[in-house]
Image (cartoon, rainbow, N blue to C red; front, side, top):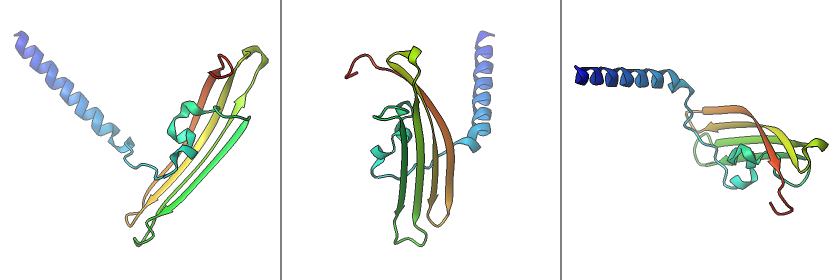
Length: 130
């Protein structure tokens, strides 16, 4: 009896997992941005880098057009903006917020990927180096 219940629970879990996967499948993204100098796009690398720079405002723009030999070349564009929000009560810390706009168009199939994301972080400086 216990063995039958175990198999029933396993089958129900499997069906639930397959059903959930099918529901989420349209939301999955398998295309990646094509930047050779990816370190010039810090918010695409890691949203926790929001506000981690010298200065108060930062704007980054990246454009890449590659593989000119194919009929329709690959086109990638990204723009990011972030800024720090200082407040005297935070002492050595600050909040930062920003957004990223990414657009990618790939080859003959003209597969497109457009995304707008928002990021936020809190940074607390422990000393001058950390």
